[in-house]
Image 1 (cartoon, rainbow, N blue to C red):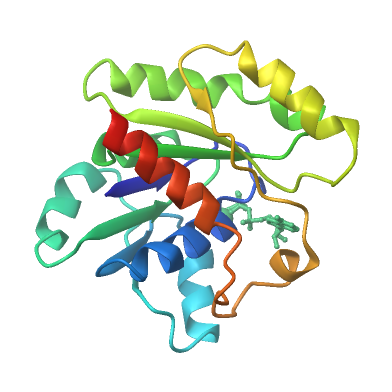
Image 2 (cartoon, rainbow, N blue to C red):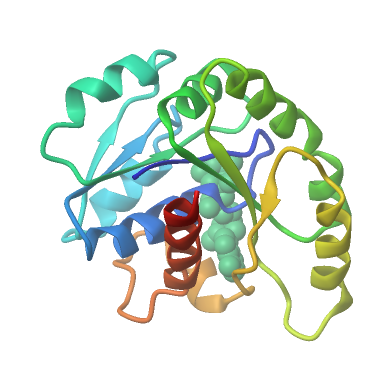
Length: 200
Ligand SMILES: Nc1ncnc2c1ncn2[C@@H]1O[C@H](COP(=O)(O)OP(=O)(O)OP(=O)(O)O)[C@@H](O)[C@H]1O
Ligand SMILES: [Mg+2]
């Protein structure tokens, strides 16, 4: 499976999502995490955390969709972490992926800024269709914000909202540079993505 993690807004949980999904995928087969963010957060993460169960390469380029083809032989899964703001790189990551995951916190600011990302997905999908899913992250337990965000996102066209969500967790806020543990909270996200892909 080729998954791109995108959101044109910064700080929405893309890199945390990319690393943890790659760790969950690595249990199933040879997985590569492509860091397409020129800031190189995922690459730095892999420098800190020696022994990640997948390889990480930096490829902050605008022709990912063609460059990935050279890397694919021998790989079962590829996850692409993308930068905020760089539309050309994000566009090429969308074109390179079968599945798009858009992590977003259930805050009004983040929800309000989602439209440009959805428009970009729609623009690229007109040429090379993928399947796009919004993932709620940093959801505070027992608060209204998560439920409210679900209601708002249910009415947004073009993408599906995943049932699986990621809670606001101290262990994830401090996870930079660490190896995802056995009880990876992103496993349920992967299970749902896999089920949806099989059903598609
Ligand atoms: N579920 C979570 N619970 C608590 N903190 C989280 C969670 N997910 C992400 N964070 C924290 O939120 C911040 C932003 O996450 P991350 O770096 O993954 O976002 P990003 O979208 O990759 O940012 P950028 O756009 O700058 O690349 C980080 O400090 C991270 O540790
Ligand atoms: Mg990032």
